[in-house]
Length: 274
Length: 277
Image (tube, rainbow over all chains, first blue to last red; front, top):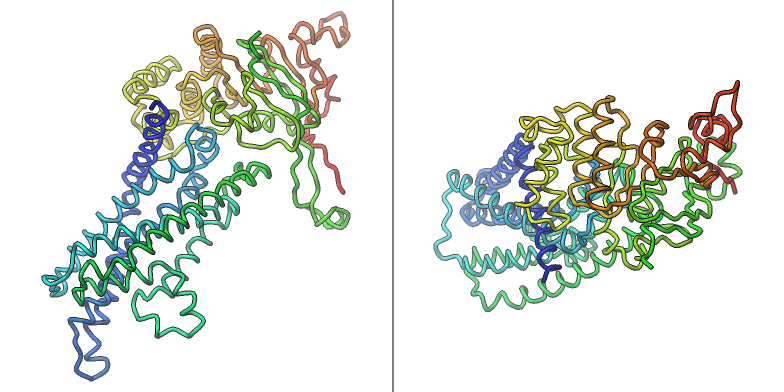
């Protein structure tokens, strides 16, 4: 019981720390939110302008919603990915990594705290973006399966936690370049996951990579849910494999992280702040 | 009989680093050279002892502290903290120790209270109890109440180091690892910290492992002192005992600094022992 209490205090330490980081770096947060909002608007305006670009009559409303779903869900999933993958990078930047690693708190506990914060903050930011974007476009989600969308969002979160842990290994292994490598991994996921276009548009070899990205399935089914009003039952064949595979990647991520942490302790890589 | 606070048996730690010069790279295996930080080190620190470690830069002092802090793994040998094997019972050991290092590493935009709350939660302390304790320690270390909520980046190096000391003491560790904790502090602050170290031993029966370059500090605080050179203990005794190792000069009894210089060969440069393979 006391172990459980201690671990929950440990998990809360990471939630509170991240809240403090946002509070203290509010200027940066505002800049990034503005950037992400403008990016969502810019992408969605491509849909609004397609009729003029092509000179052909099109279902503009469909295009707008198609692109908006992609940009919002990617914004949410990448938020989860970055929050978790940066749990080590932040400690490197601030120089506190040794103090966190010598504390009696397990890595899964650190992960639980970081994930809970990431989901909470991700949902808040995504809803805020949606609210602002809705003022620019006429969105009709009255027929959308919102319950199914929430279920998919949950499955997507689970699937991205494991990827985040695997990416968090990079700043541990490469103190100077690890964070940039994480960004490169996120960029690849953005390219292949059908965020702005169907993956069938990609060359064959990229489609193979696309099938390995959980975001591909989350975004595809989210569109089915919000644009084609797919019932929740039809989503389950995607949701369960996503959660199952996500849990598998989390376990693999934790095992890899444990080995890399031992390697870092053997070679003295925790010391350099990068 | 209770096990000692800290036992190191034949502990060896070697770091592999990229050779800097072309000539060295040509002779090194895979372009890397091995630097021996600790060479088959045996050390026992008794419970409630304040044990000092002196040594030139690169002699292995910080490596020793970081090994006991669970931040490094030894290449060979055994480390036990209050009888718990550091590798097999890492979590138990982590609950018993805390560390203050020379670099006051903090979330620089957080206030002292925010940083200390984070540390308290990581160590599973109830936050209401921790808040009372952190104020008490900060005040005893001479920090003013109005600085408690200021960002750390606005504080002087000395004040930051005091918060680092407070973080180390906050969790009431049974074994406190102090790696040059008073470096950069003014004489008043130095005295505050030294008094506090003595108090934590008296009040909490804590054991202290202290590395320092300050000979007066070592003499004032430590029950026994080891002199480390090239990763090996070359002398270990009380301060008075160490002074008997060096003859008097011009009729004057040697100081601890005389002993240190005589035993370490008078060289103050980095003294890492390199083995180029």
